[in-house]
Length: 333
Image (cartoon, rainbow, N blue to C red; front, side):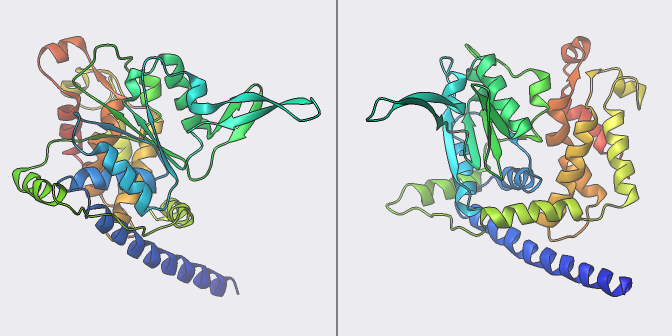
């Protein structure tokens, strides 16, 4: 009887996995009909959402970061909103606030007016332009999935994801995110310039009288079901050990002294958790039901680069976090 139940369960998981693979492939194809020349960025953004996490998009203006978030909202069937962060933005502008209502007979009561954070996909545009107080209000909600206003708790919708953007060049009048807050982002996604062929396609397809539009492929319920599936995918012992080796070798005092001496502080256990989920999601995105060491190596930089820092002497010598992580990932397997 137990064997029959187990077989039925495995068959149900297999059917759910096959359906999820089809939806994910269709979602990626739909996004790429609108976002050209950013295949890796699209992949990392989808991995972030399929893992149930939040992403930090870092890139100069004009590289379709806003367009990407809007498109993901459409394709995944999510209620998406955008907040432009500025130095005068207050926590209440994001979370919401209480207003005083008065009835016809003169009775008064407070009513909570929901802020833009009550969305399934929130774009926090130029998050480093807001004050630390406002950043903390958002990032606390990202971690706890609820907000507290005037002593009352209000749960955020599910799924709830934040894709924040940051301009790496213009830093005047900004408030860089502290390390503890950066750790709340599952991945830092670097958005780079497209190659010549992709930019040519952008010129032709976005300056005419018609423009391609992404089509909805999934619903929020489909996304939640896929996120559950990601957590149920099997992970081999070699993958677990590879993740542990990579994360621990990125800390000062562990791993190769020739590399560890350049690291001021390294990733904590949350980084290993993020890498475990992200590798499973990437495997699904590539049509597989279990991750490989190639998935770990491919996601090492976006998952670890914002969770560690180099020593002053290493920075003075021209070392970069990305290069250090790439060297460590190259030793896997």
